Image (cartoon, rainbow, N blue to C red):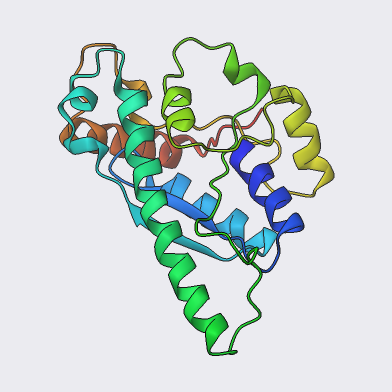
Length: 204
């Protein structure tokens, strides 16, 4: 829900030059991918998906406490490439007068936003925050608690305001159990069986 609120707020402020990006890899379940796309459509923000390659990084696969850092590094690295490419596309369209260009005249890069909230900042296991700092990512929700973010999501009418947190598939693995593609796929299949057999979908 955090990223959904961030996307909704950014789109409200910058409706003509913002877009949502979902990083896709074996650590993201198909269910969560479909939900992310559905929420973006509800918000109305343009969206795209990009592949990330954290699952090829030894430090991620080892799953000894550094996986979150490697995952977010891969994500932000991929996002940085997308923003540069997107800017070049918009700049070309602006010069051809075929598009109402909304970026500031002298800007050469697009700002990356994430859904980090205040509670996340106090969690020592969230090493992805280090990666966010390294890539100068902006966190517009960093002064709001998780409860406040959910309240805002409800106020904004987001369909996932009451949906339980959905951490990546790698988080299901015990520390030290390799985050291999095979293990991640097995976890996704097992959870799909549970959902199908019980009809239960996690809500708060």
